[in-house]
Image (cartoon, rainbow, N blue to C red; front, side, top):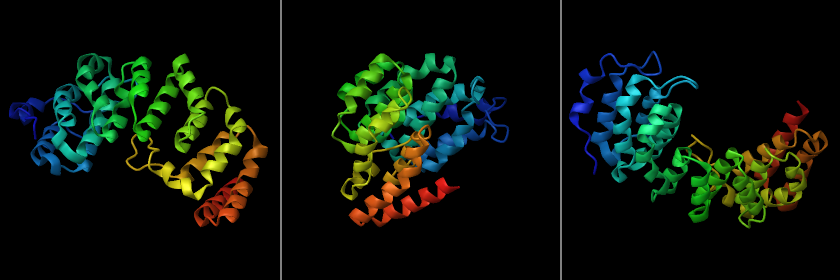
Length: 281
């Protein structure tokens, strides 16, 4: 490790009387987990980070006292390039914890901002909720070149609802990368529910092309989910966007079956059959 955590900060006595956000997780467990992570360094196990989510408060509640003590140590570990596979789950934890309490945001967000420019694309994706404002996200959009991070940025921008975000979505509707284009259509539905209807033909052309399937699976990551979404996930999401058009929603499984027959795509056929059964109730 390039970052050393002071042993005094891991002294169990320091944590006596502190609280986590979950009654079954005592605060004295937190320094033990942090010590285990720090000691293991690049060999640390990502699942150990799950134990630290007891620091994240329920929405609308202040961060527990243990979170205030743990945050400098979490930052030290997440920003340490030698922490290997745990850097992403640690960043996810920070992205949940820091925005949860204004006191934590004001004090520690500046220390977490370098994660937005981290060399690891997975860390950059996980760090997006740490961006302080839509202008920061727009700036990242202009400089980011990795498709998986651009797609996550697009979705994060859409949630801001700003004029700049809508302009980016409109611009991305001309994008040649199939996943970025479909992401722009999906994200734009929040502002214009009929936009997916107008783009349905092109979306289905891209989503049912077997040659393009890997270009969706390699780039579409959902928050707090380690594995990317597949084309099949996106077919179901597209079906959901058509809820206000029952005629198109009902016709979608048959369209997918027809495309599967044309291309000999067995995976698409199986998903179309499942979708048809779901629609039939």
